[in-house]
Length: 364
Image 1 (cartoon, rainbow, N blue to C red):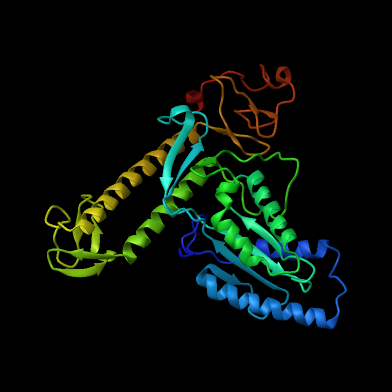
Image 2 (image 1 turned 30 degrees about the vertical axis):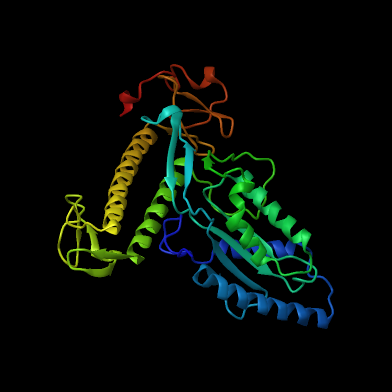
């Protein structure tokens, strides 16, 4: 099982989200209070919840975080890792104007996907009458797809009311989520629709740009691949000892690899098949790092030419030298020079207003 550390949000760990916990309690309040249950039913539910929590802790270990060991109602967060034993391809639709990517699409492969955050609150009426309240945090999926997953978890509960369901939810997210979304062979990432009519409060997290999602997916994958390498056992054919991966060092100055224990370069002298595999992994990691650095440079250059929308802050680009910009995200017209909304072009541009046509170089 993968470690919960080093998540997509770029922080050092996956601590329980206070935002998700607050939303869970608000959801419980909006339900209009608890059902009127007998003392016997409440005691039975409480015992079932205790048993379920013990089982979840034993199964998921460090991937489960509890919001206070003795708090009632019980609430917790599970970091769910999708099963992709052979890796998976990711295709991302980038902003207009990013060079070197055909039709503004970037395709890459990952062996590890950033985990899903499933946060649950068990009401006293669970499991006899109601399911747990829950939120889902998946920053590499758009909101519409997260809503679809929320509805699927509702459906799983509806098929087995009155029974413990958290383990079933996690198992489904791990093994069936990608196929449910049509991602059997490739994950497609597009900019999230900020103007959706229906909002499911159970989908939590910031709305990120495609470029931010790509950077975080690649960074998380690199971290997990490196941790897997460090935990692995490798045989040095020079000193004839087995060592963990931390003895295989990659020099960032010359990009050469060597064995920390015996000091020999990882070249033809290291003839074991395992060493050959390790060298190939290190070479691929260096190439991936170069691609990421180039992509980050291109994105910074592209975004430096953008003019954020004064209403929703979505980066947009001028058409030629025209300072009049229409934001396709929030349907607002605004001026690239003063960042103010434009209601009438004839009133905003002119001798007493902004110039409608200028080169960005004039104001660089």
